[in-house]
Image (cartoon, rainbow, N blue to C red; front, side):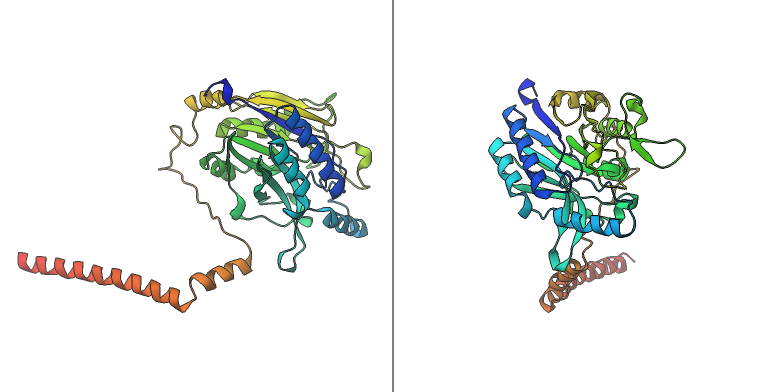
Length: 362
């Protein structure tokens, strides 16, 4: 691969219209159009960019219920509420990776999911990924994803994959995406924070006081890059503190960054408020890392440790329909019995031949 394979990437660290679906869709479209004009072929948005992260998730009583109702109203139905973003991506010829709070209305549900949507440069939804395990208080907001949408996407600019927030610390999941051929990884976060030493609480990152290495996002994205030999695009939310509801915890400090496959920053974490960050990804940097450490090749021992992946839905109705159609129908059962009956007959014939040979041999 030569310089012609270098791809320009954008990270949209722009502020959403908080808790406003339509307004945030407009913000996303403008960012996509601007990035496209500047030659970017990939663009990433933070976790739950539409309609913003529920920083109020720890609120109690009636406030939580009020916020949840409003959050439901402004969460996204895929693809219905993303038409403008699909059009903008197609018009700009740019592949878009965007975090949304997804509203699932199938079968009368109104469950929300923390979701990444992958949109092609032709303006089509390639797929989505629902966060497997919402973290702590997030379980009061979102449901749990399953294995059906944990996958990668082959594009003209590389094989794309993505995880949300603390999923980027989940070792088996990282290994799975590597085995699926991931080359460019999108790590989506609600902001850049510092974990206090004495408590489990977090506070907003302050670049004038804190060092980048004091944040667990720094260690996560750099280790992810080296461990899997991927480019890691870390997309972080930025919001002015005064837009958040009462009772919110404020970590929306920005901090978006881009890391090469050796774990070195191409663009260090940016704290300059709402902005679009640009970087160039050169495939030869990945080749150089793979030459001395290939996690799915010469530096792996699958004869010692293997991975089990269950790509199954967690929806009982889908599972029931699958069983009824594929197993419980009389025709399917008859086919299965006939197939195994034929196999059993062949085995019996082989056994009989062996018995005759043994008898003749004495």
